[in-house]
Length: 125
Image 1 (spheres, rainbow, N blue to C red):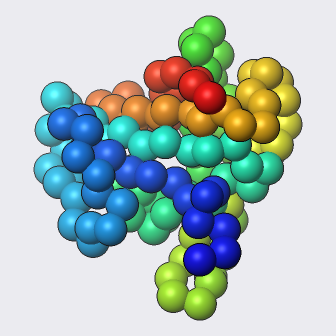
Image 2 (spheres, rainbow, N blue to C red):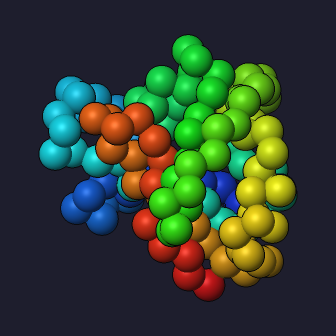
């Protein structure tokens, strides 16, 4: 499948893969957290399931906090494709450069509903 190496992989806090699942636990429990991995790509397309859980599908905005606790705000564009919608984060390439994230790196993000931001947990490659 073309582009599969750049797909966002969604995992639960129990580390079980949910990438093929249509259902996520969205009960706004502050102890629950959404964890997902983004491989290096110059265009970050948030999957519809993640956008729904984080509210990005309604606000078309996302806040990202990096490892130094610096928060940046990004507009998001809804981009239909053959089977669904992906949500493109504007300014992603600049964010990667500003945070010294290179080709081959993967970003592990956590989303905590009670603070409403994507937190960069770590970068690995």
